[in-house]
Amino acid sequence: MRKYILFIIATVLGAVTLRAQSVSDLIISEVMVENENSVTDEYGNHGPWVEMYNTSTGTVNFAGCYFSDDRANLTKSPIVKGDNRTKIGPRQVGILYASGNSALGTFHLNFRLREGSTLYFVSNDGKTIIDSLVIPVGITPGMSISKLSNDPRQLIFDNGSEKVPSPMSINGKGEQKSRAEILKETDPHGFTLSIVSVTVVFCALLILLMIYTFTGKLFSGQIKFKKPAKKVSAPKGGSGNEAEIAAAIAMALDAEMGGEAEAAIAMAMHLYLSEAIHDSEPFVITIRKNPASAWNDRTSNFRKTVR
Image (cartoon, rainbow, N blue to C red; front, side, top):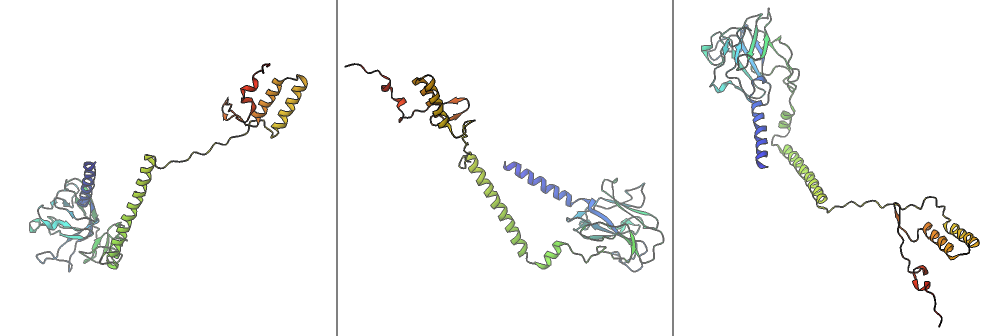
């Protein structure tokens, strides 16, 4: 059993890790073609640049991926492996420079951005297009094309539109904060989160204890459910005057026949109707002995001998 639990935990952790490292979480968030006074590269040059945004909550490494402005050649500008700077943290951005010379460094593309072209971000298989951005014609000098998010928590980005450049920052309404960020500000030491977590775990364990205790007693026989008592109904056709009916039958039999057998039959019918000597079973009448009755005394049936 322990092996199965460890296997499930390892599988879940592996899935989370793979999800956190997926390059499909990256998008092209902003590009600038005519860079006059915006961000500069490590050489101090103003040039076209591309901003990438990590939409996931885990760190993503885009080494081995490709950038291209040619749909027929998606592997035009590869990103070299082995540079730890190719990792983008959760909800963070990274800048690449479309200088046209990839020999200048890891973050330099071997083509320059141009109006009317489409920029492609391609997965490390060289075939799958993860994201793209159309660069319109007639961009105002000094302006950039960006994908805006109306709410960063929803991660829904509109099509590219012209705006004032904002490299190395999240586009859209950045003033909106997630619940985690709000909780971090209101509870910097984590006391509230700790109390809530402990309370939830304690309640869950208490509920499990109650369930396991009840089921254990139920299956071990310590808890028994009482069966509802069966209601004994009066014989069908009874009117509540069984004694009078039996007496009338006995008188009629005695008048017609005048024998003891008829009286015995009448008495038996009376006892049967009044439920004095039988219990209720389907199609069965069980006669119970009545010590107080003279019918059980066999000596009364013996003939007396003459002395």
